Image (cartoon, rainbow, N blue to C red; front, side, top):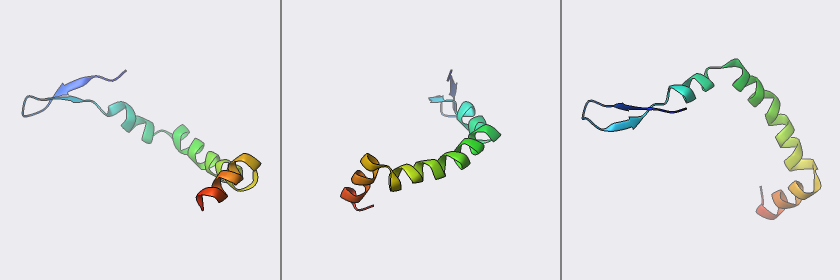
Length: 58
């Protein structure tokens, strides 16, 4: 759950520690590393995704 802090000007700002810790976790990078080839395969080889890719010229 996110929370807020007061900055040096007295303004409330959202805390980013949760997202920062997600970027530093091994599970995030493992999922990204394994997920990218699968996603690439879907957009290049699987019919409805391939059709959309060709339509958009990607």
